[in-house]
Image 1 (spheres, one colour):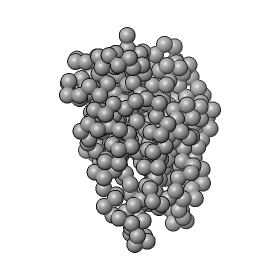
Image 2 (cartoon, rainbow, N blue to C red; image 1 turned 120 degrees about the vertical axis):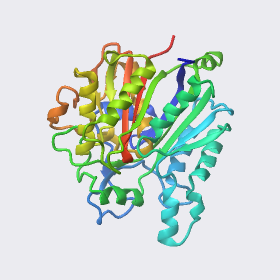
Image 3 (cartoon, rainbow, N blue to C red; image 1 turned 180 degrees about the vertical axis):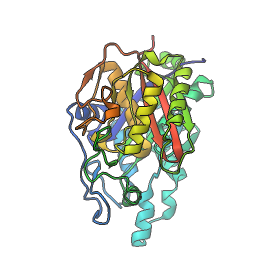
Image 4 (cartoon, rainbow, N blue to C red; image 1 turned 60 degrees about the vertical axis):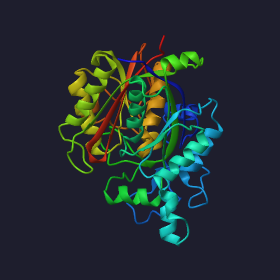
Length: 378
């Protein structure tokens, strides 16, 4: 199995505000942070709500994602080692610079390069080790977390910083609207009447170390990233497999990687976008793998679909749920869909002594990720 990959620091900024506490408290209160969008005109689109972070300047001197990242690391209470390898996960990065250049004729298109963003994140975070951009649609940050853990388990690194970010821009919003993927109302994951997703924005980081280095440096271990699985069902450019075979494969690989059985999973943090096809695909996969009902929740009714940052935010909340022994309600859930009945709830649920949690994500082109988290390491 190799050395254990353990998470020693984690933080996020979401539409609920700065910090894991803000997001956790918002979800537990069953309060949605989705609101009417005023960042740009929405009359031409099929919806007008999103999850945005207050106080960000659109088309200013600094991109939306870098404004989020600067806030995040300004509040960072953990020392980021200079030798940390850096994995940057995003779908569109600083796309607002490209927008600004096209719409106004001002701005440097080169600033929207993901390689340039990687340099900025390295400077802001202090991580000076080798860097890599990982862009795998809406599985970007969960795939990056899996990559980091694999590097540590294989002995190729003993400290990796994963940073994830994506922002609500007109380009992104127009794209989802053109696909008819947006719900006119705030997203309702696993609801019988769900009609699409709500776009959101977020940034976050995970500092992952080998267990040996964490112990040597006296770091507090928050969770172990015990297993991971990735797959691609190659079904459609935007639609998931109707048989859920890709997600089933990813979950199976994650369980095998972690060395745990399906019966040892205490709860599932689902991708749960609120689109009819995604939620049905996940429920088919969960039923196929677990045979019995498990507590399942989605955070996207609270903060929206934060794209490349989604997996990292959900990993942070799953880590919190493991420690608190409680999972948040699925915000926005009214009438539970038939296939999700007994799995998903609009109420907070206590979970007696969960040892392991599963986090699932899916994205365009049929990519799927599954991560197994374990409680504190001895």
